[in-house]
Image (cartoon, rainbow, N blue to C red; front, side):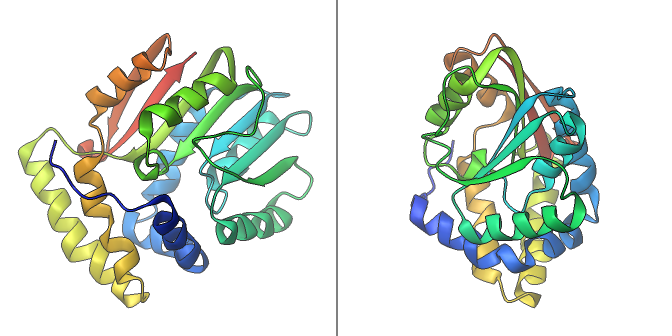
Length: 236
């Protein structure tokens, strides 16, 4: 893999705090609304059931956590965890407006040191977070630790396509669509980091190997959007 200098955890946290007010609107523009479909697929693959206790790691503004809450119902519980307090503030506001009767706890915390007991959650999701942690193997180990035996986790993120043509398209899209659009929102610097973060992010095959090393009994990576996105589905 190409060696690219990684930002520190504090730098990544600062990025997500800065983009929080415009994060949802920008993601809608950049994905043409498709990100909501990918997130619905991610939630489905985590197999939440009524009454479950579910975890959304790196929850951001709360999309996946809110979807999980609708699946586990009033008898269930969802915890959304993120290290960016500005993102959590928006998530809380969205919950109050969209589904105030559902049980969601918003927790400021570290994906590399989850503040939960072993074997605690029935299912888990993670959206666009694995690429941004500074220690992916440790993140997967922590996720494994807090899940119950047999529980599933689904992790959505960007992916480097295997097809050379799709890889060229992805690079063109990032440089000619993502960065200029981010510039319109006065967030050029914040979104310019996506391309280098992709270069150091493990491919789907590499993610499956890392999950196996973290002792998940099964791991499958599903490529989406021509291989430019992917969901890693894990079973403890």
